[in-house]
Structure formats: structure tokens, C-alpha cells
Length: 524
Image 1 (cartoon, one colour):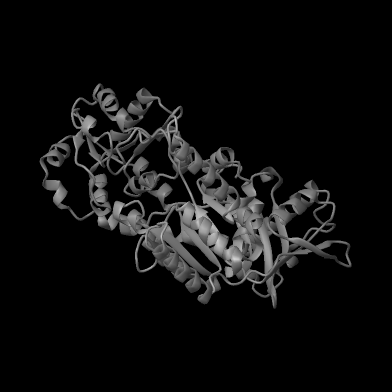
Image 2: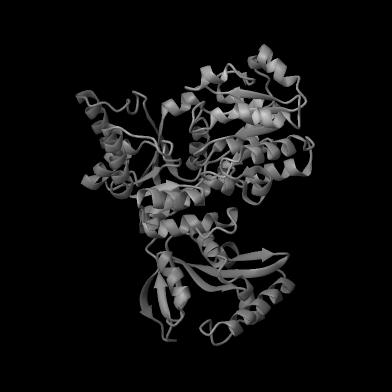
């Protein structure tokens, strides 16, 4: 930083010192900020707002890790989480022991440091408390398994997972483990053959000295791997689970379904080390629905590789020659639905929604990509039904649309929103699950109150009228970039490293703090 920039930090330091009773007896002057320290330029951070510094963290490297010399936040920004974010960014790029001094009377700061995994070690000669973390191993030494289902690959639901694993492999020792594939682990069956396959997988995990096993969605497998870890494996199990309750309100469940839900709830609460979900609204919903302690819940994100996704959109598939698609392409107002055709996804709402849209745009057409139990019913209406298509075909069709429709009654972290946004295609949804969080500051333009079909139709009409290369579409791409594969992988790797080294509580704090700028206004 230039001297002019450092002067701004000196002024910020003095404001903080005047406003805080326990900050420090003597504020730093320009020479303090200029002082050369090992690793200072690489480790120190400054948060800016409107071109001015509003917070800073000064740190330096030591033989056993990192020492934090200063954390300061402008009094006008206290309570916004900027200090937590700076500290979390430092954690993500550091290894070894992280230490800091703190006035014992500064209770807010001590509470923050405790959540972050610091522990009081001693009292310094100056009367301050010396706090430090347990040693954090370098991220690149983390041995991680990413377990996902091959059925998700075939359906397209997990088509992006290999790309995320590749990104994780560039910074950690990540291994892909395919559930449902005989090479790794066949589908779960109550049989001697499956038990032997699982035993071989556990033996392999022990040989490879796995630190963390990240299981995508399959809670039964996660529970078994957690138990194996407790019985001598030594690894921690993180279960990614992001979605609604899975049944509509008022649905009567049979005895078997109720028993399954009770076991599922028990697994989430007791038989994994941590539940991973996101965005922030899902944390709140999961905590309430399953009675989960939020200190055992990590915040993470679905991802979208913007460059790869946009490149794939340029190839025209065979689908384009179908009569139903040709009719859709000839319409000046093209809407698209890409999801399962069932009541939870709100597919039954599509005919009425199209009717409402046509009150404003008489020539509008709605192309439906997907299948499910409602397919026969919807095929008799005004919709253009194209059935289920591969993920690389979906991207082409989505790129031709003027607006994506998401009519779900329940949602988790719908990646289909990211896919549309990455192409600059407006996407309207109801305020369910994580939809509002994903849209961020764009939510007022694209998110309707839950179940308000008239409002959704109005938003869809307005979105479809946007210029193809307008500012609003650029804003959608910029919002999608927040969830690009690389930053998602960086945050996940840092969080799971913290889970292994310090446990679920500090990892939960780290995950929320790292993602805080992506979800402004959220407490999580």
C-alpha cells in the first residue's frame, strides 16, 4: 500500500481506538503500519467500501504459523461481520498455529475468537491474553474423499460434480468415490456381497489415511462411513444435504415412511460429524426441521463453471430439429421449464402460469424439459413437452430462452438458477428454499411470494422483455460468478481442513464467515 493508503488506515485505527474502551492504549501510527514483518504483505488484508478502508487485519508469519497483530473495524460497520470475514480469509490462506493477543475485558472480541477456535494459552507481560488455535495443516495435505452417486451423473443432477472434484484436486488430495459403481461401491443392498464391498472401501480409506469423507446426499452411506470412522478409521464425515422436506404439507405417510424419516433425522443429528447445506436460509430450515445444532452445520454452495457452461451452450444439438422445439424457437417470447414433473416441483402450476403470461404476451410459448408422474396430464395442455434431455442439451435450450420458470413448492439450492444466470437468462421462482438467497440483491426482480402465480407471471413477462444484451442480464452473470467453481472449491477445502483440525464448531464459523459477502444481510 502507498503512504496515502496507509494514512487512511492510521485514521481508521484512531477512530476505532476512540470508540472502543478495550482496543489498545496506544493507537498505531504510520511507522507501525510501515514496519517490515515476515509475510506481512501476503497475509494482511484490508476491506474497502466506496473506495475507503472500513476494516483491516495485519498479520505476519512465524516459524510455527501466523500471528495476528491487529484487527480493526470502522465503528460504523460494527456488527456487519467484516471482522469475521477478514479472520476467516486469513484462516483459509494460512497453516500452522494462528495466534492473537486480546484484552481480557473485550468480551465481544473474545466471543468471536472462541467461535473461531482460539483458546486462551497464557497472559502476556503486558496483561493481555494470548490466544491460539490448534495447528492447521496446509490445505494441500488434506486427504479428502468426495463420494457421489453415479445415478446423479446419469440424471444430470450431479453432472457438474467431476468439475468441482477437479478444482478440489488442484488444492487438496481429493479422490472421487462413485457410489453405485461396482468399481468403487455398488448400490446399497442387504447382502453379503455389498458388505464385502463396503469392507474393502473402508480398508482402502484406512490405507490412504483419509482425513475427511464428503458424502453427497446419501445419508445411509454417510452414517455407515461415520461409524467406520468411529471404529478406528479416524476420519470425519460431512454430509451434503440440500432440499425440502420431500413431501407436501398434509401428506399422510405410511409406517415405513415415518420410520425412515425418524432414522434420517437421527443420522443428521447424531451419526455424521457435520451436515453441510446452503444457502443460509437452508441452514435455518434444517435447524428447525431436524432439530440440528447450527454449530454442527457447515455452509457451502453449489457451483457453476461459467466458462465451461457458456462454451457448451454454443453447440446446437439434435433436439433443435424436433417440431415442438422448432415451434418454440419461432416464438418471440420463449419461456423454459427444466425440472421434474411432479407436485413438489410445482409442474402442475405450469398451464395456469402460461395462461397468465399470455394475457400480456399472446405469442408466448413454454418449453418443458423433464419427465415425471405429471407428464401425461401436462401433455394434454398448451405446454411444449420435450421430455428429459441430457445436461449438455439443456444448456443449449436454456441459452435460447428469454426466461426460466421455477415453480417449485419446495427447493434446496436449485442449481438450475445458477445455470440460467450464468448464461444471462432471467429466471423467476417462488420464495422457497434458497431461491431468494441465490438471487441476492436481484430477488425483488425475480422472486415472487410463495404460491403467488399472478406475481410470478408479471415478473416473468417483465424478464422476457429485457434486451438480450442489457445491463440486467449482465447483472445475472455477475451474480452467478459468485458461485463459480473455483471460489466454491476454495471455501469448501478450507472449511473441511478446519473440520479435521479443530472440529465442527470452528468449521461452522469459518464456513459462514467465508460466505458472508455473498449473502449480505444474512446473520449466518
